[in-house]
Every structure is written in structure tokens, then in C-alpha cells.
Length: 356
Ligand SMILES: CC(C)=CCNc1ncnc2c1ncn2[C@@H]1O[C@H](COP(=O)(O)O)[C@@H](O)[C@H]1O
Ligand SMILES: [Zn+2]
View (tube, rainbow, N blue to C red):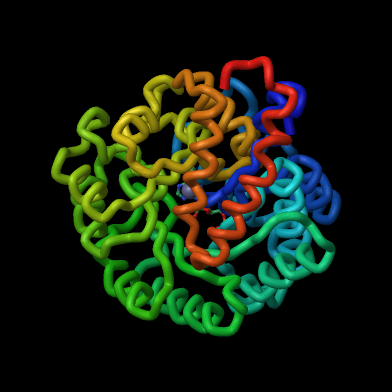
């Protein structure tokens, strides 16, 4: 996507993607295939992606997911979508991907939450058997709008798959419309998940009104934070909250285009990346929804570099340090670090004249 606009350095840079929602990551070509499978839905492509320079309210963004969910409602759809998304990330130079998705039940197509997860796992295994050069893991997502009971049910499912998927299912994501529901209702489920060894990545403070909820959920503590836009005092948060995040050394997953197009951040130069990065806090560049926001991970790295004036060596370190934030075990981290060492001369090769 958008190859011509992104410098080859960012394409070739080996990358780790830790925050990608499956149905938000569906590309234009895949949407076209889905639309032609379901012409009766009368869905036009303009309804599933937000183009360059466009902005949407948070509410409008969540409407987009509803449209995509209509297009993706069978095992066959999920298999195609997951396979395409994995191959696209691999083509963009992503070497390790943690994909997250909310298991759905669709009575009219026979889809169950269990078969949903099984199908994503099938896609991951299929890509592996085809030799696609990417290590993919899965985080089962809880949509906060669905409340306590569904959250508990999702934790149980995730636990079963964690024990039976050969390390492919590693943890849980908490996401969904941040203006709906309250984290306190989900706390018991998240606590249970943590106790049984599932890793937790929680969307925190995507909107300003969530500070109290974030304070509560940070006591778990989660293993990573999605967005955390309004945690820092410079963004309206508090020093006490920052202290908690720092004390537990919880990495942040930061998605520049998503926040600007969703209008929770006014402009790129205002993005909270700068506050956390300056503090030396683990900050990982991610896409969130590369399909919906018409971006990819190379582009997000380039955006971070151009906005915050990062040297190529600093960008390299950023992608390398993301390895320490993955949920897979240390052996996988070591393998990835070896890969980075091996690839570095190639990535910097034709840049020898540049100052590194
Ligand atoms: C609206 C906006 C600016 C989105 C970016 N920030 C987000 N915040 C919270 N949940 C999200 C976000 N993007 C995707 N999701 C979650 O991911 C789902 C789509 O992927 P999936 O069906 O779980 O595979 C959405 O329905 C929603 O529950
Ligand atoms: Zn997200």
C-alpha cells in the first residue's frame, strides 16, 4: 500500500507489529474480493477506509468496523482475510506480528467464537507452511461493550487455546469503543486471565474521560498499553499515572495515523509518542487498523521519523527495541535479535554515504 511514498529504508527495515486488529487491517484488494462475494449488501469501498488527509469522529470510525463485520461473517471470509493480512504484513517487512481479533458468533452462517479462533489459527499455520517469512501470534480480543459475562467467556476460550495452540495464542486484548462500558466491570475477567498466564494488552485512555478507569486497570498491571493517549500530564493525564506506567515498565503501543485520523490527536507533531520516547520509555510504533486508516507499518515508522526528526540509527533502535516488548518467550526474542543483526548491513548497505 502506498509504496511510492515510502522510502525503501523503511520498507526494508525489519519490523515488529504488536497492535493490529484483524478486521481493521483488511486491505483494498481484499475488501474488493469480499464485496464481490456479497454484492447484495450494497457496500461500496468508500465505506471501509479513511483516505489520505481525511478525518473521522471516533463514532464514525466504529461504524466502519460494523460495515467490515458485515463483509466478514463466514469461516471462509476469516480465512481469506487473515491469510491476506498476514502476507501483507510480511511483504511490508514485518518479521513478527501479534494479530488481535474479537471472536464473533454469526448464527446465520454457523460461525461460533470457537470456530472463529480456530480459523485465524488455521490461517497462521497455513502461511507458515507456505514459508511466509513472518512469525505470527494471536491475541484474543474482548470488546468492552459486551460486558462482564462475555469477557469471562472470552477469557475461558483464550485460556483453552493458549494451552492447545502450540504457543500461537499468547494473550488478551481489551478494545472497542472507549466511550462505552467501564473497565471496573471487566476487572475480574482480566485478573483471571492474568492469573492463568495470558498476557494482557489493554487499550487505555484513548479518550480524555478514562483516567479513573486507567488508574484502576494499571494496578493489574497490564503487560502492554494500547494508545494511552491521555495518560501523560502534557495530554491531560497525571504524573501519578505516568509513575505507575514507569514503575511497572509497561510498553506503549503507539499508532500515529489512527490517532490523527480518529481525531483524538490534533496533529502528528502533538502525538504523545514524543513525551514517552523522550523519557526513554518503551514505545512501539504500530498501525492499529492499516486497512481502515490506509497506512502500513513502514509508513508509520517514516511518519514518526519525519515528525520527530529521528535519525536512521534511531529508527533502527526503535524497531529493534520493540522485540523486547513481544509476548512470545525469550527464545523467540533471541531469534529475532539474530535476524536484526543479520539484516542490518543489508538495510544500511546503499546508505553508506548517509550519516548514520
Ligand atoms: C475508532 C478508532 C479511531 C479506532 C482505533 N482505535 C480502536 N480503539 C478501540 N478498539 C478498536 C480500535 N480499532 C479497532 N478496534 C476494535 O477492533 C475491532 C475490529 O477488529 P476485529 O473485528 O476485532 O478483528 C473493532 O470492532 C474494535 O472492537
Ligand atoms: Zn487498537
